[in-house]
Length: 183
Image (cartoon, rainbow, N blue to C red; front, side):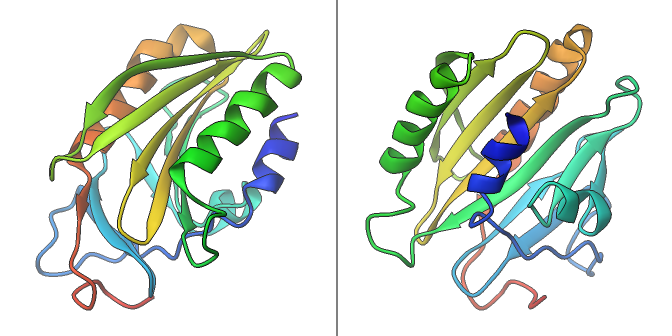
């Protein structure tokens, strides 16, 4: 079921730069394309992958925490660009999730919004299946909706993983177009 969900989100692909620049600290990363650019901080104990894991999960940027169990908690960064008018809007993505999750046996729960470093309100929704759950944070930016999708395979690590997702969302900051590195 999860692979079906991720396949349907294949249009939500990001170009990511894992290289450090002179203006970035070791824990900050700028992600971008021609339509969007933003910076997030990578939490301590988490790693960034823009190749193997990212491609395997239909995203080109994946943060993962090897210390949180054998299943590795992951946060996939999935931008949905708004090039196609009316298709990848926040309302449409939320509507899709509200119908898809319950139809595939998940409890769909909306939480209190989080706020990014630059003041954007972020919708946060948990999809709880029998043995695992995902938590999606939807950041609406000018030309894209950035979906930060947390996968928690071992529920005993839920609180640590949620804290990391919250930290990433709260570190989110848009970067003016043209100043982001080209990937």
